[in-house]
Length: 435
Ligand SMILES: [Zn+2]
Image (cartoon, rainbow, N blue to C red; front, side, top):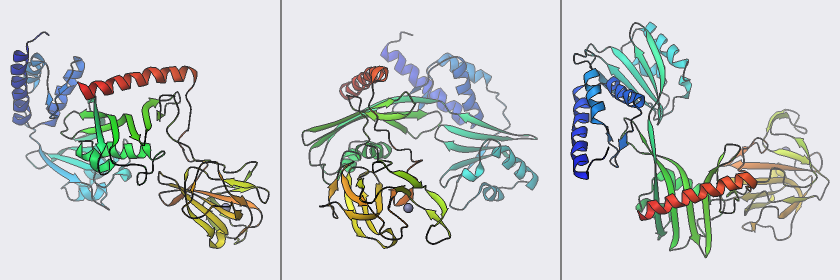
């Protein structure tokens, strides 16, 4: 459709007016859904302007929709919004709304077939739609930002999962750090969700306290997501991120690997993340796994919060990842014990050691694979072994089932696919910045 700018502006204003007229005169979600359904059928595209108002592109479509909407709709809904509070179950929420018990159980039953109501989270939004006789006609549970569960209540109860229409776009920002990555990022209009992802991405490389200095430059590109019927903006993945610090450029591109994982790689195809070692010593045999077990000394069942590797006395033990020694000394039943703090919320601990490598003490920086101590049998131990723990946010996790970042290096076809991919991402990024 070749229209001059002036004409299309007038059209847009008319369309927008019509849109407001329709959504206001018929306060009916149903009708809004129909608008979108119709659009889907006709393969029309929704334009979403930066104010996040949804505007219909095609005036002819709107007229069609207008004709389709029954003018004497008797169902005028009143909306009640409930935000799930702590300790509030769906059943309790329904108690506050006049409903026959029988109906209540039918509703719960119908929902549970599609969505486990036990998974209802604090802060989750539930909308109740009542007709003029204060009867509930519809319930809408926002499962996530682009998924609704809708229950229609008449003689029959009907639940349905609805995937909302989404439109993805990209945004790019570039700035210098004056204060902190977070505060300057915010000042430059980067949303919280993206800043958190950015910090997580670079936490494998950077110690934000020490490494980031004034005038460090940051460049990012990220997905913005618009969802039908919603005024909030949502943000997806980081596509690109670069931090230039002390003549060192750390630059990563998003890539979906052959295995289907979304991960980040530099221009050479090397993965951003340096995985933690799952076995921090050579030639060891796994002798006790993570989980409940009968304790070999105490005799009763106890949670084993690490894994044991049987190995000869004196076998060198390696640092599981880059980090700073947090504890190196005697620690009760753990015997001689080392704990390393890594940058990204992870810690690793090493127990029953016979001794520490010379120079290993609190505050010492270690690199992955560096010898930190030696296998022993100190503390509550039946024989020489290493007790190894991976701790995430101060809780021990099972190192064997832990989905650690891959540390992968792309090769061959996958590398070629990545190279094509990152050039596109980079071109887009520059385009966004300088358009
Ligand atoms: Zn153990």
